[in-house]
Image (cartoon, rainbow, N blue to C red; front, side, top):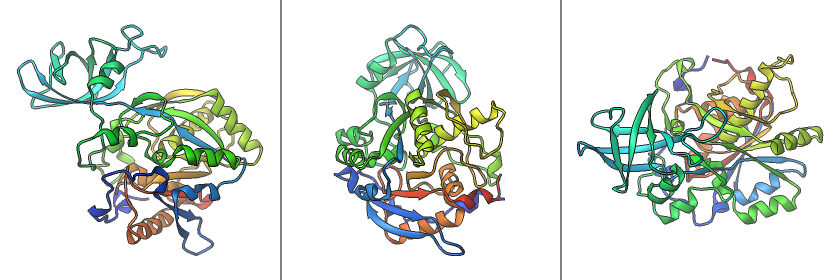
Length: 377
């Protein structure tokens, strides 16, 4: 059984990318080939634009089309005390319609202040408008906006760059910390594997006969939540909303039928696909862990925690950035390609001075059939 320390590594601070490269597809791409019997994985260095050469006609790339909100606000309480607000998500009713009318004026948020705000009090945000504090929902506060949330967030909010990026967001970040295909507002962090794709690369993929489809998973601030227990089985995952649209379900089923591969662009796409397949398997008669059921459209919340030993039902290959030590995403990629394969890949990336985290470089991983035999927590 693996523990938290098994997913630790020493990363030189200088390798944490602080700025995006001028050209999206100019980032580096480490191709991680599955290891031969009793051998180390084949590791080869490329530019991200070389991705086309790893794909085949009939393969399907699955992108997460969520759009990052300008979700961070600074403001004051009625007492004059300072507050910092990070919108976690916009609130919907069970039918999927924003509450308080079609404007969608309610959100859940993290609120940092010297003292917790009380229900019914107001916060002045961005020195521009007031929000009313409502009920507490776990670690979040309900905030009621005076107008549609999306309008006020876009007009007055600040881009919520990850905590390891140390500069103040500027106009360049507002473009580069967003994928070129972002369409559905709701995330507070970018699906960063998608940041490497530009229009020229997408056109090259189309010309090569590689399919494209999208899902939506709104990335929450919990993606940066550290694992605080050595026994990783005790870790409680954050929850995120996602949707598998009919067009994607049809594309995946057709790709499988034709012998193509399903390639997740980023761990958010991976988590949404595997969550949908898991939920479907649990409600069907085909409960075998490796059952390949036709995927159906699905909309739900997911708190899936993928660790070594997990059996993947949908995804064959994964495009992903390099992740933080001791993170749940390190566990996910280790489950996908094998713990020793990922350790070898990270040693290589550090030795070759790849750039890490959100604005960093990427890997192309293939699912290792033997990886699921690792000890599961």
